[in-house]
Image (cartoon, rainbow, N blue to C red; front, side, top):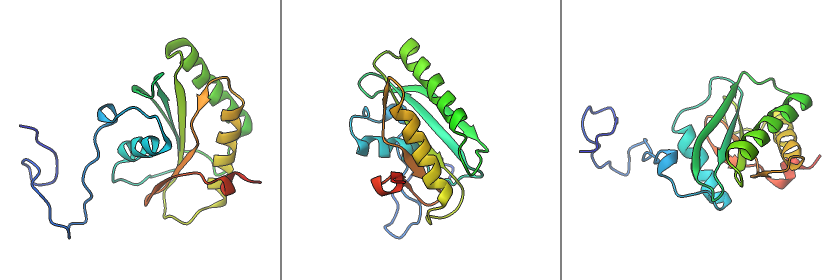
Length: 163
């Protein structure tokens, strides 16, 4: 019997439409491969879960050649409000080495997350721009950057990347 932790101590029972708790997303290894942005959105939501963030952070995932979950997940906590260009370039360099050495043909997905609501901060745009720019400079495939906060996960819009 598959039991889930839903606060009842037993198997998850059907919920009414008025319940506030959204249905649990599958674990990343149970999701279909990431082949489109919608698949990546689902992966980030699965990793984030219903929780918020205690501090700003960058999440990096290495996906296999056909978008499969590789379990290579790097989370960097306590990120400053403004990204350091050299540190971001070094991060992408490390991720590039991982892909080339351990997951040939793989790709990288990046997410900047911070605590708080859905109002967009200047720091969100700065991180999105720098992660995107660094991703364009490496010789491996890098997916579009995502942003997350306590309320939502979303792809970075082209307007957010414009200077």
